[in-house]
Length: 60
Ligand SMILES: [Zn+2]
Ligand SMILES: [Zn+2]
Ligand SMILES: [Zn+2]
Image 1 (cartoon, protein in one colour):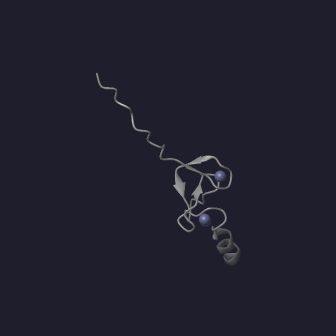
Image 2: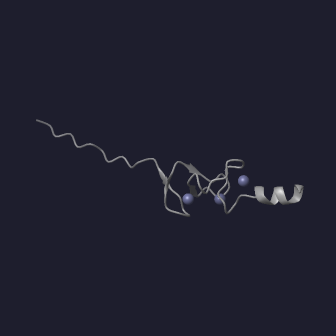
Image 3: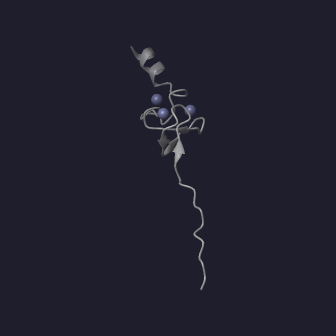
């Protein structure tokens, strides 16, 4: 009669450091947890590190 205690495996999910929502990605620049809302699709950076809007301003 062995009682197997299941190991407590922490869920491999992040929490957005901005809105605290669960996220699955991190900013490639500052490596902070970032949800889809605060993750730029183009550069994979959080809204704090994203410079896409700067690029757009330069082009236009
Ligand atoms: Zn967020
Ligand atoms: Zn960032
Ligand atoms: Zn961006």
